[in-house]
Image (cartoon, rainbow, N blue to C red; front, top):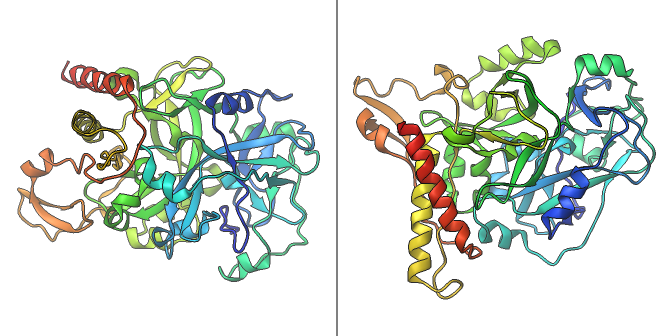
Amino acid sequence: MIHLFKRRKGNSLLMVFLLFPYILDQVNAQTFNYSCGMYLAPSLIPSGGRGVIAGSYIEKGAVVDIAPSIPVLNHLVLNTQLQHYVYDSWEAEVSIVVLGPQLIFNHIDPRNVQIKFTDIATSWNALLHGELSNTLYVDMNHETTRPIGPGEEILTSYGGPSWFEIRNITFDNDIKPGLYNLDELQNVGHCLTHIYVSTGSLPLSSRGLFSRVKFRKGELVSISPVLALSKSLLLKAKREALVMNYCFADLLSDLVLLPIGLAAMANHGGPLLTNIRVDWYIWEHAQEEHYRNMNKSVGELQAMKQSPFSLGYYALRDIEEDEELYLDYGEDWERNWGLYLEDLENWRGTHKPYKYHSPPAFRHFIGAPSNLYHSGWKYNAACNDVDQVCAMDDSGDVDVVDKQQLALRGGEAGADEMILTTYGEELELARGYVLQMEEARLN
């Protein structure tokens, strides 16, 4: 299978740094001649897995995708599934995870899209250590190198033969991709441009996920491939592991699931605002592959070179155009976010910002729905007492703990010291909203 995500060797990343949210909004609000601009569908390239297919005519020089980016230190990438899915940055120790359709662009030369370079005076390390809990406004965009017709696959270059050679992948560059007709594409594909990213509605949320069209209750809103990562590895580097905030995790498993589609940008809505849920999405043409992977061990999943699963995001109620989409991250996440906001407020009352003492930072996994993790992915029966279970602590070590303690244990609210912007009234609004969510759960 052609691996869908790529690490550029020896080349500078071509990035766009968007300083103002409205710039992103203008690009994301662009309309397409056809009802769907891009589809996620089975690639017509042999062994190409899934690809991104144009749903309408796209002119030369058009921006087809702008993706939020997450910096991750290289020692968290090496010998993990992330190694096949990240881009290099211009800093030797930092790689970039990008969220969105471009992560699914397959390889061919000559390509029909390319990354546009804008030189920015910033440091990925500074961003990694210098923001609250999200990607802020650091993005990557792709522009077409020639006109692309409806039904044509959108393709980029992974950087030459060496990318395939170091991964022991055979690829025939003389392959010519096939062409979908639109009726077939609508039947087998899923529209990627029915959601977009814009400025979030909640305080301290930075950006959020929005619907471009109406969705009915129960309808599929988005599909996202997921990567299988190690919780213990991320926890041992929690200080630098901003990517934790985008991962699903179960307290009793070392398996962490990182969605790499735009749906990963959905904010926490709690009991008040949540309007989408997440579940496995099984492609009709890949059912056997899905169930085969479900029977693999955590270690086998983490050792795979390609994404083992896809997640589906489904509407919990009718959703209107341009409505923000919210997931429920779980009570544990919500409790820790509240504790973090208390820490931040205490820091603001004690220290003058940017003077001598850095504020706390938030690093916490999203609680995975119980239906995602089966028993084979959880810690085995080293704990035989009926009142005890195996659970991972915040250093990444597995402990034997009482079930009563486990119910009370949340994970650090954010004791790490990092630099972040002073948010003023937004902090008070965020704390107020947490209290509203707590009251709603009690009622």
